[in-house]
Length: 433
Image 1 (cartoon, rainbow, N blue to C red):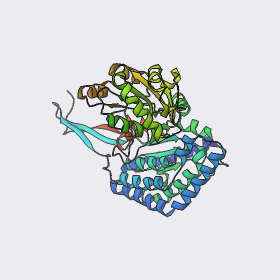
Image 2: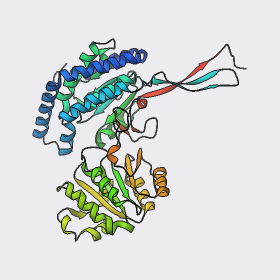
Image 3: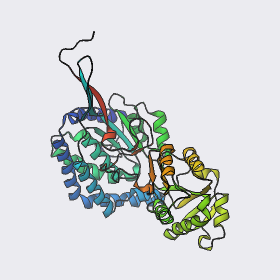
Image 4: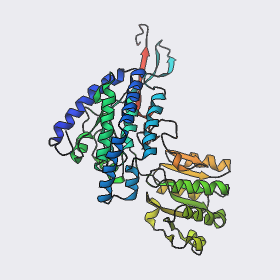
């Protein structure tokens, strides 16, 4: 079935769902060796098909440029040598991680005589809807397999050729193992009706993971009948405290903003304590602009008073609007605000942030501990770049997304985030009085 000849979406999706459910039951019973063998077989197929995958990605990139995709989407879409090698390493890393399935914890004896605890188990069938990044296809597939879940993947039309090339390697790798080839299914259509089917197939799908822009997340959250692990936008902040080390403040701010723009863990707002703003803000602003001459700084009134006459920043400054504090730019644009101290910084972040990743730069232990307690985000950092909010950097091998939910999984979602727990009870003939 190709992108162009999928006509009966309901029938197609029902078939995909049935196959995934059957595969999930076999996967739940698979041992660690079988799952690792499958991951390594897929790795070998990817190595063999490297040129085909990069060629498919070039088709997507060429189409994206013709269709005027913005630079952030094109950045996410591109598979270069380094990213391809990163995909391969991520696959090997997942294979090397401990298998969470079957882990038993919290075993206790009760007065009745029963012995009970909790066992970690797969969720079952995961449906994932995502945009642009073809490496997500492999990351999600590898995490699902290792955690004993079947997965249905629906990528965006802009990455169709890349995703299908990767899917061929996954299917071929699975064919060398005892696991079902339907353990991972990459949809062969970009028809939006397939998404509507996927998010309402409660008999076949146990959880939906949407990964993309606000419009996609809003649609999935509003229309889904299947539980959703949401990955909302990354409006991330760095707060420069009055007790910040100046060198660290500059280095971390530059990295957090300019390392990559098209990622959800990129800094979008810089907050600076007014006690050090006159001294530090010009140095930070100059360093960020020096790192990228295209950078635009959106300034509040206090920031303007400090920076507007700075010759090195000429052409890079404009007044911030109220919308700037709530915006994920995914571009060389940074909102800048001078705050009265940690109280205002925390209030601003909790009001305007997306609860993704927020950072404090400080040498004051008391304030650092208050910041990590009171900032309501999935990742809260002290003296480190927000760009570290990533499954690979957190030692998860890869990630299926970064959840901004508060229930079940929060932050980068790796193997454990794709599992649940069930109670297990051992008895010796006990009966309840």
